[in-house]
Image 1: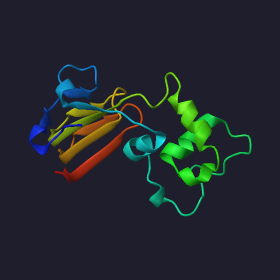
Image 2: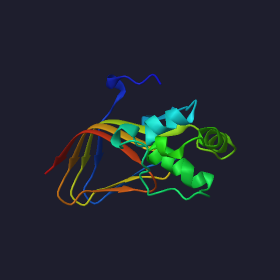
Image 3: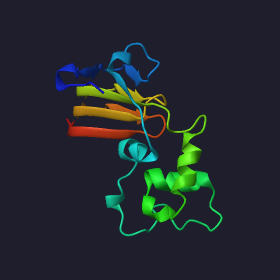
Image 4: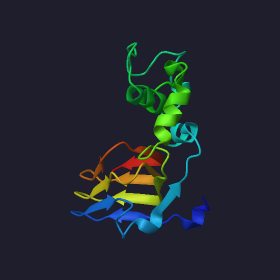
Amino acid sequence: MGWTPDRLVPLTVPSGERVVLDGRNGRTAPHVALLHPASIWDLKAWIGAPDTAFAGAAPRFGELPVDADLDALAGEFLHGNSRAIGDFRTEIEARLSRAGGLLDPVPIFLFDDVVIEDCGVLEIGAGASVFFCNTLTMHPQGVVRAAGDIRADIGICIQL
């Protein structure tokens, strides 16, 4: 990916302003990197839930019906317990690899320190999948919104 700590820059959301992190937004585009998944396992590692969070092969989202469709199985694989889907991994990989599939590049926003001032709004848009920052400082009336499924990796969160 080529990102080093010295390339991470701060972001401040001023009081009363709204900043949208979206890959199509020119203001934040320099802070976007694209991850290129080679498999559904890469996707699970980057945007999904780790299997270590679950015991055995129990599904996260409740028992899967016998006639579960591939979308439900793919959701369980990525955001739940991949061990719960049994022998459907090959079909899920094929489904996610097709046109419009999830094996497209995954945008990630990378920042050093992010400060959201009073009444400031940071919106992580639908064009982003992963948000990373070393430190997130939230003033009392600061807001973070997610438009879609987002994985947030935040080193330290400070609420003032």
